[in-house]
Image (cartoon, rainbow, N blue to C red; front, side, top):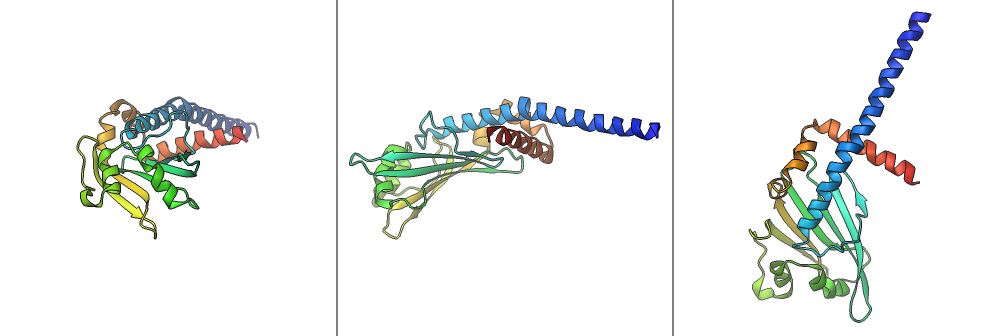
Amino acid sequence: MKKSLVIFLGITTVIVLTFLFAVILSFKVVKQSTDKINLALKNNFQTIVRIPTPIPPETKSFDKTVYIWEMETTAGEIVKVRFTHDTAFSKATNNIVATLEMEPGGDPSVFDKVLPAVIADRQTIISIRDPNHINLSANQEQGYDKIELTKSNTDKVIKVVWFYNKDVFVNKNQNLYKKIYSYPQSVLKGLYILQRGILQIFST
C-alpha cells in the first residue's frame, strides 16, 4: 500500500513539474518569440498596408494574425477593413500570404474610397486605380511575388492579396525564428496553444 502511494505521489509530482515547466517555457520562450515575430511582421507589412500603430491584433492564432479597424471618408462614411497575414511559425510553411479585405457587410464603394489611404504600395494602388497600368507581378523592392485582386459585382476591389516567399521575413528575423524552430512542430504548437489558453482563461 505504501509502495503504491509512493509511486502515485512520484508520478503526480513528475506530471505537475512537467506541466509547470511547459507553462514557463510557453510564456518565457514561445510567447515572447512569437509576439516579437508578429510585431516584426507588422512592421514589415507597413510597406504595403498602413496598419494603425495603436491597433492590437484582433485575433492571434498559430497560423494567422488578424487586424481590424475602421476607416472614414471625408464625407463621414465608415467602413471596416481587415488585414490578415500568415505567421510562418510552422517550419513546413514555404510562403506567407497577406490579405487586405472589406469586412463582410461593408459597402464596396466606400471601401474603394479608402483604399488609397490604407494601401502604401504604389504598384498595388496603381493596379487598382488604373486599368491601363495593371501590374500584379513580383516587386523585388517590396519583396512580394505577386498580387491578386478580387472585385465585387459592382466592379470595385474588395480584396487584395500579396504572396511572399517566407524566406523574405525569416532572413530578416533569423534569431527569432531560430528560437521557435528549435522545437519539434507538435511541441511548439502545443506550447503556443497552452499559453493562449491560459491567457484566455484569465481574461474572462
